[in-house]
Structures are given as structure tokens and as C-alpha cells.
Length: 202
Image 1 (cartoon, rainbow, N blue to C red):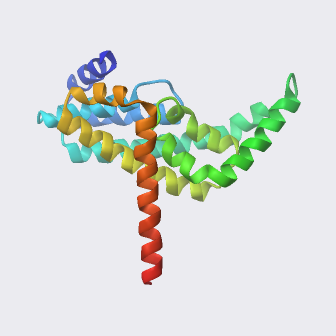
Image 2: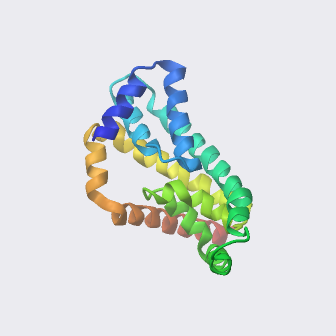
Image 3: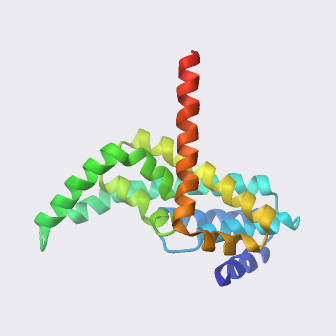
């Protein structure tokens, strides 16, 4: 609740374009790997939108776009700098090399759903893009599922903040990581079913 209050106060102290820029900066910063409350800022902005201070449509659009941009920056940093750091000669090089190999195998098999679900899990959201980049996940796949996750995340959390107000963060915290992961998994299943049905009808 403290984080929500701080984010709400910081955003409400601003107005118009500057408020949306603050939201974009917090979300993009968290998505690129900085430990800052981007998700809390989204909820806070949505709460302010419910009070007429901001537009909920713009809040969702700005948050989704910022998440996509931040994640792609994190992906690039992980692919270049993170991988170079892990491959650097020194202590535990053999162990680090094994980690890279196992990570690459994991992202080859589960990268798409991992990138999507990472958006909904606190902590993983900060590191997910980096790990995808470090493990050389195909950029085209990363972009597609990252964008899908960012749009679903911004819409879900934006609407929760808009309709539930200050109670949104308390509900999300009590729900826990498992519940949020289940929400993301349900969205992936629904998308897969829709794509299969669409392909069958062509």
C-alpha cells in the first residue's frame, strides 16, 4: 500500500502529458531491469483515472507501449552485455557455460510462454527480458509474445486499478504469484485455442 501511495502522489502531483511520461518512465524502467515500482505506478495511474484525473485508455496504452519498449531494451542489454559477462574468463566459467546451455535449451522449448507469463510475476518481470536476451531467444518470437503479454498486463492491471481503486493492490498482493500466473496461463490457452480455430476455418 505504501508503494501505491507514493506512486499515486508522485503521479497526481503532475498533470497531463507529464503524468503520462512519468508513468511511461516507471514502467519502462522496471521492464528494462531496474528495481522500481512500474506495476504499482500503473495501478496508481488507473486509480487516478477512475477519479477523472487521467484517461484510462491512455493509461493502458502508455503502460503497454512503455513495457514493450523497456523489455526490448532489457532484451538487447542481456543479449549483448549480459551474455558477454557470463562468458568472461574467470571463476566458475564452466558452471556459467553450463547455465547458458541449459538456459538456451529452456528458452528454445518454453521461451514464448515464459516471456508472456513473466510480465505477470513480480521479480521475474524485472529480469525476464534480460534472461531471454542472455539465452539468445529468437527476437521475432520475443517481440510477439512480449507485446502480447504487455498489452494483456496493462489492460488487466489498468482495469483492476480503475474499477477496484485503492483496493486493487491489496487484492493483487493477497492473490499471490500463483493466481497471477494462472491468469496469464488462461490467456495463453485462450489465445492458442483462438489461433487454432482461426487456422482451421481458413
